[in-house]
Image 1: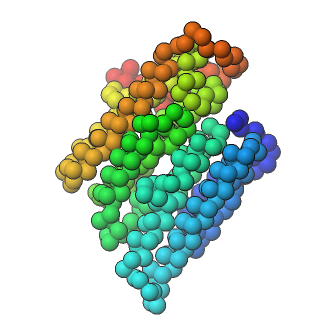
Image 2: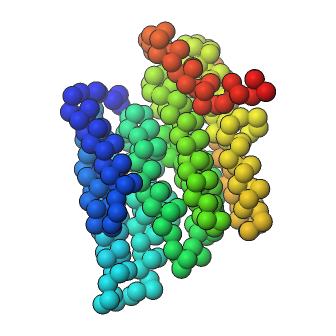
Image 3: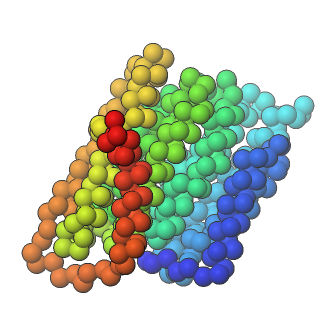
Length: 335
């Protein structure tokens, strides 16, 4: 599945960006709902860029999940402020469930790995980064005190489920989907401390790591772990870059990915030690399949009959520079 760039794709991508900015700057729930609906409708053509049957199925799954989340969001947000609400104390919980559904977070994650495994790497990049910006902002900035009691359970469930379910996967897109679910648990843990800016900092660092990683996989046209053996035969520098990005994504020092996890452990441990233990256990399971990817990539098969993927030197240099910048190696060298 290769992403096909057309003028219509440019238009829908610009609408996707604009609708997310509208959602972030909205002043009422109705305008927020309308902006997220526009974002949903503009992202579906991007999912179906290559017009394959798999992408059509993924677009239908994405639409159904997001439509259900939007319906719950609109209903709960109106009933929260209505004097004739049927279940006034349950509405904040329903609002949180709608945001978790749109975010692809556990236990409402059923659509996310399935959609990720059926679309191109470019669509995966947008879905894992930009498309999460608006629902994540709503979750961390507008979580009420009544719904905050569910945050430790949701954060721990994300970390454990993202680690357990990703350990026995062979499709790289599915592995990255469960990795994203695991990282959501770390982002949600800052809600307990009323630190939304720290959650957004974690999200920005996570995006800076997955964007060059996904672009490298798109450039090499890799979809399974077995295909990683061709990396050493095509481009050893890109093989090293991808390995370091995966290690940084796992949160091992001295990479940039270790910094937000260290901050989480230092800040949240004073509030809930069991939650930190669960997050660390989930991160260790994530480390297992990251190392599995790296070992498969380092083990080159002599009988692999794969044609090298042609790519320009300019593209390779840009990806290498973006990867080095996202890893934060330049400040560490200066120190």
